[in-house]
Amino acid sequence: MKKITPILIAATLLVASCRQPQPQPEALAPLPIHTLHGHSTFELTTRDTVPFVGDTYLDVDNEFTLQWPSLDSFPPATCRALIRMAFDDSTSTTLQEAGRRFLARTWVEDDDFIQELGITARRPIDSVLHYPYNSAMVNAEIRQDSNLLHFSVHTENMLAYAPHGSYASQSLIVDRTSGAIVQLHDLIDTTGIGRLLRRALDEVPANRQNGDPTECLFDDYRQCLPAPDGFSIDSTRSSITAFYNIYSVQSYACGMLFVELPVGWLADQQVLTPYGKKVFRRGE
Image 1 (cartoon, rainbow, N blue to C red):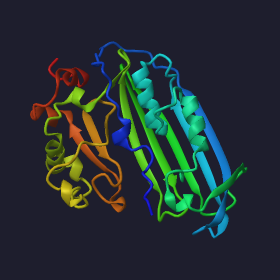
Image 2: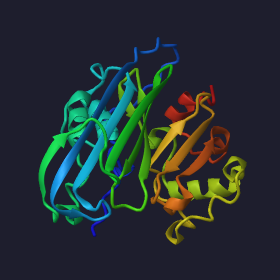
Image 3: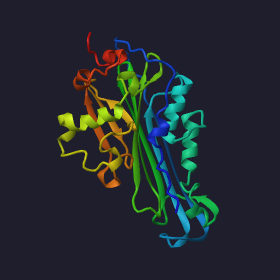
Image 4: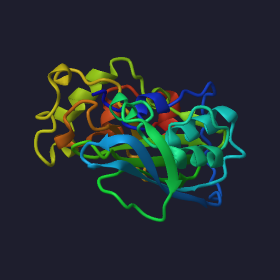
């Protein structure tokens, strides 16, 4: 059976912007937040019996809730990156269009295991009638910090024939003054980032508060971590938290891996960029 790729994989969603962010110290009024919500439930009829369901039906339940500002004022490249992050959609030009496509997804289109059953019809239903069923849920929020806009997306999905569900978190920071995406290499020198992150697991006390964070690492990453799936900046701008989604560097049972990088520790490593120093108010 072909394994379905978890939706919204971080490595394909964090998109580089050609603009160099330019932070501004002045306070900016928060942008108005809008809620975009959608929910669809439908039933697929199959030619042959669906294993685990035990019938010629497969129900699908999709839902999303985005609490974001309007993207109309953002550069096209930034808008496309945010749409990809929210809905794993690289062709839609608006969130609304991408949302409609998301609600129509069955999550079996690329899986030979289900395609061989033959889907003969689909009809809308008010609620799930047959268990287990396919489902996908997206929740997105924003945190506004003066010139920095912190977009985040959390996705959960479940396939009727899978042993467990899957989830992923994504984040994207936008410099409001330029509309550009802030990437990790804008903040720190990412040369040798894998070894820097691995050392942080050993040297930063916050990373060891709940025990040894390296116990679950796959063997390939015990000495050097890959580039993270994403990162966030805390509300005090005193720390970067890099993260890896499930399966990226450790097993599902161990969950996501978070690596805290205090700004003071990063300054000691002499990896902060000039832009990073401005963002974190270092050396002023």
